[in-house]
Every structure is written in structure tokens, then in C-alpha cells.
Image (cartoon, rainbow over all chains, first blue to last red; front, side, top):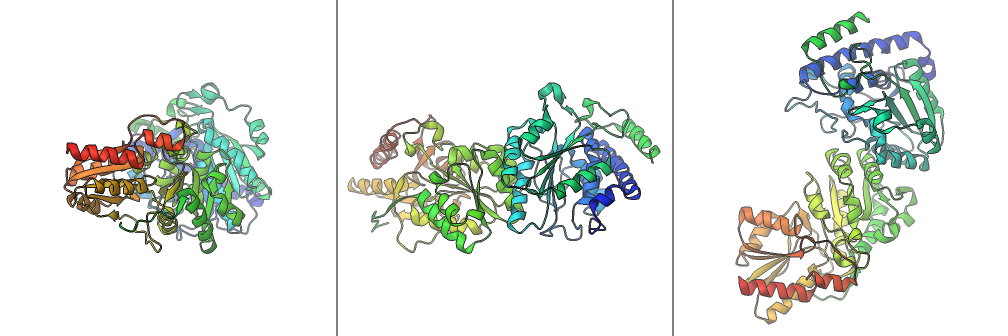
Length: 291
Length: 317
């Protein structure tokens, strides 16, 4: 059952150095999992998986109420990974949380594997694979539907949607940004993994989102900005989202594409290409040294 | 069906709205979404009765479909309504958020076909059945009258899996007796006949029955089979009807003949019982504005048009 201590206020966890250090260490281990599974698969998206992993870690192990022993629990919190290409980050957490055996990570993208290249709902319910995503721009709407269902049932669960910056260019995202405040969905949190890069180049050059904070505020969300690699700050933002009533919260999280692997950081070329054996070795050595 | 008395006329969208509002009384898990067309799709009948379970999504069909998927994935049974062309036009959302996710969403498309007339092509659902048929797990249902619609709505609320329900704007004549029982996935023989079989679906079913009556006066014995479930298609029933009708087959639909009912029957019989085939419908052209009856007649989808085309087909066969 997660979080381990559900009664503890999130704001307290956010400022507890020991709790943060534990999450940082989990994220470090899972960065290795991400690198190794992508290296084995020979394809996939390391850049956006590494930029998201600190927040995914915080969500899985301190924020979301979920139970790997009872994955279909009706009142579990939902996490929709709208930027579906970052699913290696979710698979790593699924293994860490006990949804799937750790060995299974090596089957990523293989024929017959449950670990498809982008999230699918069909094999096991777990945060991050609650809906099929991968065609960008759709996850916030799906999360909104789940949040509406929760409201109808008297608010038994919260819903979190993680977006990519490139997919914020999709019109459907702005439809959902327009509609969620209409429905007063204070049980919905949008999170932007703002790593500033997409396949064809820097997001600012491909199709700038700016001034993003102004746009989101103008759409009547409660809008926060944090460093997406500062787990304490991120948890603090989530705590503020929980305390905000009557409107949904959107957290713009500044991140670094490829975070944690020196030769991948800030390099758009690592958006959608896997490391070779030598690069895996180098990345794992770096991540081990970071312990 | 002998004793086919066409006393009642009602648009299937109207029958849908009434059935949905009734369903809401017993099925508290049913929720309804519409994209600023509830007055036209008749989902307003549900909205007025159950405002807490109705979501007005504005003119945001893509967002509506994704939201419906989320509601379904959290245990609700959403009916997601708009014109057939608009709702199926958001194909990727249906493909990924709804069907691939295994979301139990009922997609309702009204204003099917050229029969809407005046508003013209941009408002006419003409390719929607073809689009929906191509998606794995998607059921496609098109009722022919008010009784069938009510029964189909009730059925679909319990059907597990995504489904597309295609409805008419215009009034259609009742082709079933009271007490009609809907059988999902089964064709429904409305009239026996041995010289040929007409497979019809939706609005043109009643005109096809009239055409069969007119052809009987010419000495042709024409079977009429109503295909309300276009997917999954009743392969056994379709083949049996073709065999019983000398392998002479006509399809009639207010939809493009590519990929809809005509396409489905052609695929089925091509594989299982090659037959002489005539597909009546919209012949790979855009629709247009005009008085509904005139537009329907132009595409040969009224009684006279169906009669004429079937007669020519049988004479040439």
C-alpha cells in the first residue's frame, strides 16, 4: 500500500530530509533501470523518461494512494501519463512498487511483452497505465473524465496527468484546459514535464508555449511553477494543489531532458534514441557514482 | 414481414433520447456527454431529468471523447453524443483513448446520411460506419425504427466494450411489431423472398420494404433483411439469406458504399458465398444541400429509387 504513511501531511514529508533522500535514491536506481531497459530494447525515449522520473517517483511513493496487491481498487488515485513515450519511467516504478517482476523490464518492446512501447491498459492496472496514451494530447481529457467520475462518487480519489511540453501544442489539451475549471475539478492536477525539447528541436523554436504561465492562469487554473528535479519542492506543490478548492491545479515543472546522465542532459538527440552498450555502461557507471 | 403497417413515424434520435432518459432511472452508472448539440441529438431529454449526470462539453468533440473514456475507465457508462460526422471525425481519440484503452464508451452519432438534406455535406455522416468498423473491438449498431432504437439503447448500456450507435435526423416508419426483441449481432429477416435479398440498415429499411412490395407486383420475390448490427456482422445469417435468395444480393444504406454496410456484406459474401452484388448508397461522392426527400431521391435511396435499381439489377442478373 502506498504511500506507506497515508496519514502524514504531504507538506511535512516535503520538508523531511530523510524522506526526500529516500525518494532521491529510488529515482537514482530507477534511472539505471531506464537506461538498461532502453539499451536492451534498442529503441525508446530516454530524454523524457529521465526528465520525468523524479516526479514519477514522488507521485508513486509519496502522493498516490495505490496498492500493488489490489491494483483494481476502485478508490485508488489515478495517474495518467499523457506523454506516453516516457513510459519506461512508469515501468521502472511499477517494478519498484511490486506491480511487475523486476526481470520483466528487460522485455520492453519485445514481441509478446506486456511492456509495450507506449502505455496500454490491458495487462495490469497501475498508475501510469490507467489509459492508453502515446498519441499526444489526449491524456488530460481522460484524466478529466476520471476526475468527474470521482466527483460523482463523492470524491474518493484524485487524478494526476503528466503532460509533455511538445504535446501542449495539441489543440485538445487546450480544450481540456478550458473545461476542467468549468467543472470545478479540484481533484485534478496537471503536471508539465517542461524539458524544453521535442523531436524536431527546442520547443521554443518548434512551436513556443510561452507565455505559458499567463496562458494557464487565463484558463482559470491554479498555476504553480517548480523545479521538477527538486522532489521536496514538487511535493510541496502537490500539497498546495490538494489544499486548493474549487479549481484544478497545474504544476509547470522545469526539467532537464536526459537528467542524470551527463552526455544526455539538454541534448534533444536523446529524445527518441536508445543508448548503445558502451553508452549504457558509461551512464550506469555515472549513476552508480552518484550514490 | 407481412402485416407491416407503417402507422408510427419517429426519428431514431428522438427514440434514443426517450430511451436514454428512461434508462437513467434504473442505470445510475449511465452518464451522458454532448458537444453543444443536445437539442439536436435529443440527449437533452436525459439532461433535463438527470442534470448531475449530464456533461455539456461545448464544441469540443475531441475533449468530449477523451473525457468519456476517463469516465468509462473509472466505472461509468458514458453515452457520448454529437452528429455522426463530427464525433467520428475525432478518429484518433476514438482509436486510442476509447477503443485501445478498452473504455466502455457508447458513441452516438445522429444526423446520419444525406437524408438530413438542407445543411449539406459538412453535417452529413457519410463515412462514419466505415471509420468505426475499422477499429478493433468497436461494435456498430444502426437501428431502423423507434422500437429497435429503444431496445438497442437498453442493450448497449449492458454491452461491455466500445460501440457506435448511428441514428437518423428524419422520421422513419416503424418496421417492427410491438414487443420487438433486439438481438445484438443477428440479422433480422423482415420479409421472406427467393429471387433476391436486400440487406438494409437504418433509415432506408422501411423504403426497402416498400420497394420489395412494389417488386412483388412485378413478380419478383424479394427478401428484406435488416442489418442493425453492422459489426460484428452475422456472417451465418448473411450467408443463409444470400443462399435462400439465389445468390442475388442488394445492399441499401444512407452512407458511402465504401466500407459501410455494402462493404461489410461484400467482404462477407466474397469470402463465404460469392454472390451477384449491387450496392445502393452514396456512390463515392460528397453529399449536398436540398430538401431531404429530393436529396434522398437523387441518391436512389427512396422507395422509387430502390425499386428501380433492384428491378434493373434483377433484369440484368
